[in-house]
Length: 239
Image 1 (tube, rainbow, N blue to C red):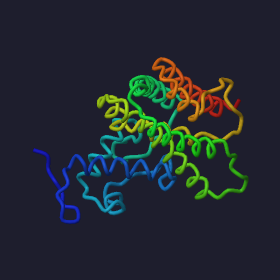
Image 2: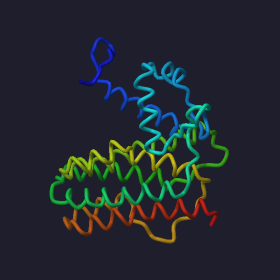
Image 3: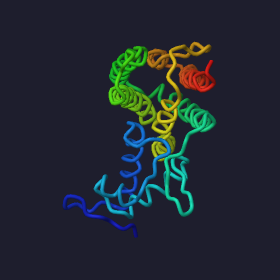
């Protein structure tokens, strides 16, 4: 039977606390509050997150299995320095899962849901295309990226949840695929050039959904993600 911990008078299952810890630690990394290479001490993290040491330890175990942190004997747990191969592998998995989610969602999504998705896509494409001004502070840069992530997460997870396949949704959520790809993607030097591949935008994905052609939606989502991957590879390679 899963152990529980009290939170504000309510018993919270240990597994849920662990998942909360995983999300909280990922956010610390994503927003630059914890840098790559930083040591993650269980006691300090538990105090910072106002959690018990057990769920924090379990969360670090999960993050280690996901490749986000690494445990070094007699030294501790550290945020991994990500490699381009990490990013490519995660994007390839996302393309497979999210492409199928789009395929399945095409004939399930309502006009109201499409309108809402289009509003998110319009804002996301507007922010994503906006060049960051020079001299932007570190905190402002991470705030900018955090807004992009919030919209991107809402957009892609909305399609995944509409698709009706709970296993696809669970795989994306439990492995934190969107957050992990985002953390790695912003970790490489920022450059302004576009990918050689003209990748569909988020609004293009919505337009594809409106056509009610499952195969076209799947291909549009996968092409969009592959275009994002290409841009990151070019930044990493310095081209």
